[in-house]
Image (cartoon, rainbow, N blue to C red; front, top):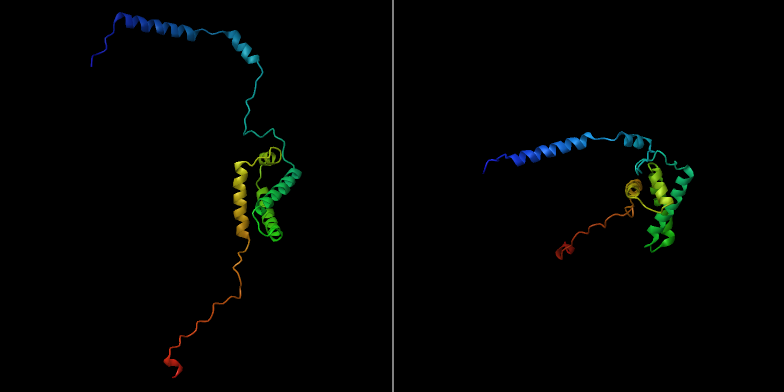
Length: 163
């Protein structure tokens, strides 16, 4: 590699660039600063700031409870073979799920569900958690309780009948 040689034109170009940079940085207009300070402050929309939102009333939460439970039952009955019996069973389980979800439901989730007809991802996560909780609360039907296996018969051979 060749060592870098400094010639007169390189030194002159670097000094010129340095002087221009210092001159541009040193220039300022104080009138613009006063105008900027007088301008009204525009706030940027922050989707995570809910301090100015209206709180959800208990009436809206009750409406959420009714609408969500009805949707849950309709979704479960969609593929049902025996609608009369399954309606009672699914109504009970959907009420359990909805009641469990109301414990930690946020105002934004209720608003999105009722007014915008959206199911946010957080609502789906809470639904899965509530469904798991309610499934754990219900006893498991193990069939007939008086069921006993058939008695094992002794094998009889041909000669055991005679002796």
